[in-house]
Length: 431
Ligand SMILES: Cc1ncc(C[n+]2csc(CCOP(=O)(O)OP(=O)(O)O)c2C)c(N)n1
Ligand SMILES: [Mg+2]
Image 1: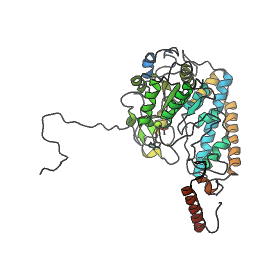
Image 2: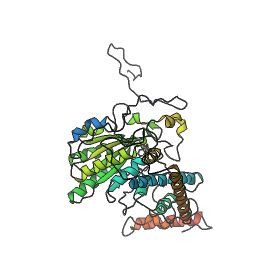
Image 3: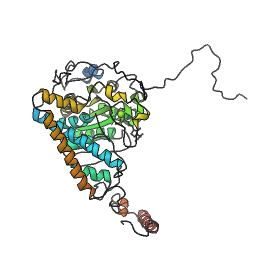
Image 4: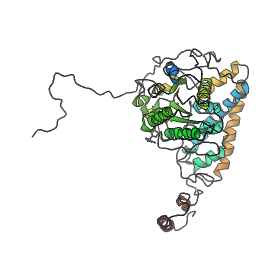
């Protein structure tokens, strides 16, 4: 009897070998991003929104940029926004950053179990959301708090959700930061990566079937594009010409896995569009004007029945994946410093200053006001409870809201659970 062996059989045939991607830099490594091709701002052509999808093919390997090193807007993608709109965008950025700082600190203080920052990626949510209509349906991932803030969702609702307290509209049933708001056309965030992509396409198809005028937009991380759901979404989108925008946020990391594991070594994420026959754009995700212009292009195209667009926003996750992560264990700290596309907040600020529409004093004042607003609202939300203070929704409510009439077996389970809880905590806990 022969036994299986790891040794290859002797043969003259070439031996196969497997390629396992490895990131360029690990902790302590010198970082050099000079291999990245960063074209000058303003040099990318802007096809008509009604063009055939294949006309966008060159843009899938390019990088659409508007803001140049001179802090001025250049080229055909310049959305020509008025200074008031640019200041509004900057204000949303300030609020998102202040919010992230405070919530991160809140987690470290034990007020919540979990938080995720979007530092460096603010434009991919705020600027994109501003290019959509406020009732377009959005299907975000967990790093798009900027969409809610740009849509004017009350900060207190966000904090109540993060604290899972008695003011939490989702009754503590979702992981902190997995918001949901029907009124703000913001679909419930799911922790199951990429599930939002076919849902967005399905919603867009339904909108078209009903002859409605609203389109859908979804956001998905580059790592999550390795999920089958993403590919089903692209197929359905192209087959039915669904009025949807599929935004891939390429921040180059998926927790501790680098983008190579989702295919980044072979081609761009925007180029995924080509195989499906989708329109595709690759955009400097840290350039707020390029983000706005590309999202608007895709929205106008979808609204006019021109079809779906896949947009890759090339950006960098400046901080850890979440409060549960420590990136110093797997990537070089120098990456953030060397990252050549800069910081979206700084770039927009400098642009407004170059236009003579802003100055450092006003920026400081705005940052201070944003921090104050977040602090005030946090204190307000804390009255509804924080983690471990027991001011959450009554225990029994976890059995409610699923069935119109609670079935007998769940009634039994609920009674048993409440009984066991009373035995375990005889001194009494809130319901
Ligand atoms: C289906 C599924 N697989 C794995 C996970 C665990 N997980 C949560 S976030 C994450 C990384 C996702 O990275 P990416 O899509 O690039 O988004 P980013 O965090 O960079 O914004 C992983 C693997 C999950 N939540 N769901
Ligand atoms: Mg990522």
